[in-house]
Image (cartoon, rainbow, N blue to C red):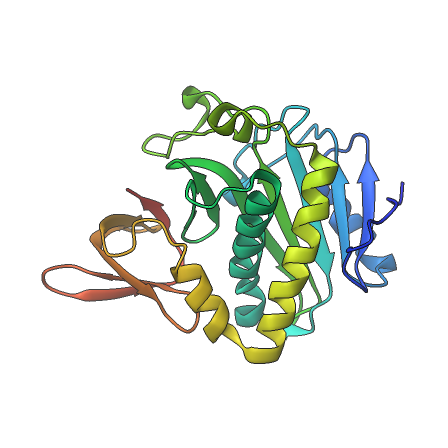
Length: 254
């Protein structure tokens, strides 16, 4: 069903709320042919949720599961920067719904942390030809009321946490979407208008473990070094005692 939009809902964005669906990412792909403008798809229950690299995403009722699908008319590199606009929007939505800033940080490339544990994740999927993106889906999962057990996440991953368990606050998924959508639209407009520099600076000011030693695991190796920055393309930059590495894609471990 199409949602009744609140007064501060961003102009040009649509919203669909579904009682149950296999996956909001799958639903986004199904809706692309009839897409008029950027559309938020919120599922109150998902039966086949997934995370990065096809990993299962545990998503009990009461948690937040949504996908923003749009046609950005961008190259793949610029489309990938939307993980940073989405991270910042999530941060703003958490602050708006809790009134707190200190517990929240951003983990490269696409997680939000609460008291050092993972409370939210972002998944980007796109399709296109010749390096151009014909559509982009930004999937967002938030542990509002419950988090997976430690045994359900991969070894060395950060502990999963929920907003309810860490703060005692109960936030409805629709209310969270109503805070997230305007925040995303603000950051999207900033990126489109001024480029990545202000987004990069805002993200770094909220980054977890900046300046500390972290480990990046790629498909072929692991590399540990001080987390120096992210560059103008969103790549993480690590420096060890002997070299500096710029890494475009990796799992990061603390």
